[in-house]
Amino acid sequence: MSLKSDREKVQGQLTAHYNEMRNIHMRDLFMHDQNRGKKYTIHFPGLHIDYSKNIISDETLPLLFKFAQASDIDASIKAMFAGEKINITEDRAVLHTALRTTSNQNIKINNVNIVEKVHAELEKIEAFVCNVHNKTHRGWTNKPIDTFVNIGIGGSDLGPKMVVDALDKFRQCETRSFFISNIDYQAIDSLLKTINPETTLFIISSKSFNTIETLTNATTLKTWMQNKGCNDISKHFVAVSNNLDATVEFGIKPENVFELWDWVGGRFSLWSTIGLPIALATGFENFKKLLAGAHEVDEHFSQTPLEDNIPVVLALIDYWYSNYFEAETHAFIPYDESLKLFPDYLSQLLMESNGKSVNLDGHIIDYKTMPICWGSVGTNSQHSFFQLLHQGTHMVPVDFLVPLTKQGNKEHHALLLANCLAQSQALMQGENNTDANRYISGNKPSTTIIYSELTPETLGSLIAIYEHRTFVLGLLWQINSFDQWGVELGKKLAMAIYENMNGEKTTKDLDSSTQNLIELYKKSRLQ
Ligand code: F6P
Image (cartoon, rainbow, N blue to C red):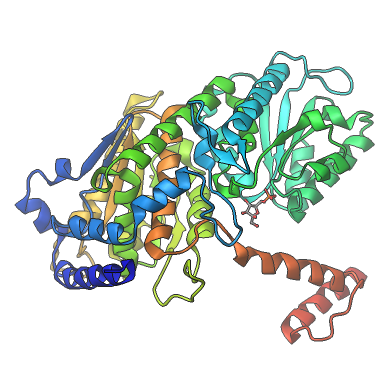
């Protein structure tokens, strides 16, 4: 039988199974199986993943695994690790896993061993970080660097920013860090009030070196430095990019350009030279530990049978909700102040990757793909939007993330953990009450990821699990998770509108709404 008809057959079985499961309450599943909590927990070094509070029975997962097999997941995983060009619309390999390989593997692209290149670039980062930390790298007035500013957006911002924030307690030195992404000048304005031009290093992070927000911000900051008297920009600006010519044109010395490659997608790039801010803030050794944690997950993902494979299990449960229960959103709630930026990071990872409506054969599809991802830190969110999770009309699967131990006040931590566990329990069991206003139905699904402690290794593992879960979801939906053509139109139109706004161009067939809004702007400039 062909894979297509295999998939259709299993989908039929899943529909029949869904019709049974939608009338079953998780409370009863727990009551009938005292071992459910343990049975549906997967352990990984530093991580415990409890997916027992999901609307699944002993029949659900075998059916979902059958679906994974019918979707040829195994072969696609192998293809990715082997460097096949699975990003078919851009004709590129997808090899963020090669960025964190520890062995001297030989992965060839165009006959060049990319692992050697990766390791060479890592050595360059190590040397640079060392020079900044030991004060060898100095500014134009010979003062040591005490501040760095990452200028980037999307994958060139969200990943490194999230990790630097998450690993704040691992900071190796007194260097302050800032991230500038928005083209809104307000961000630069407040930055300039706190930095010293003589001691600040700017990292222009842009794979394409063609992104309007990043280049505009970088140019503004370069001009600011020159106006402050900086007579050697090369001491203050370094770049991370795949577009070496453009970095040179900007005035960056080739030795201060850290290379990244077209086989690293922006939202999968924090392991590459895009991670330079991580190494600068937390030290190169911690950056390596982050890579090692991710590498362990790569080994697990590429070698573990589907049934015990963490990213596969989690993706299958996601698929179950989005395509059978028609869940339209998914919430990510870290009970960890260190992970407060994680929901934002995941939004790009999951939605830019899987917000697609065309399959790998180029056909428009008639089923749902990525739900909307959102979230915020617990316990704050309990006092804002959790009401909707408990009593609203939408089904919102939740990922809870919480550390088992945390440095600092033990009492606070115990209460934090208790609150996290209470929320997943309340969502699952609900509460009976004759007063309809106080009745809580329960049966709301969640997965709890408990990590022993947030270390560079556990964070690396956690991120890699989400990366691979993203990929597997794309395979289940038969879409390409590695392109993002949808964002191009807005970029193109923004430039055309900009030209209309400043009178460089007059587009005749502009829609009346956009036309009126442009006129409003033009009038405001005259006042
Ligand atoms: O516009 C989307 C995007 O291409 C993201 O995929 C990417 O992470 C971001 O822009 C930044 O791109 P670059 O690193 O090339 O500046």
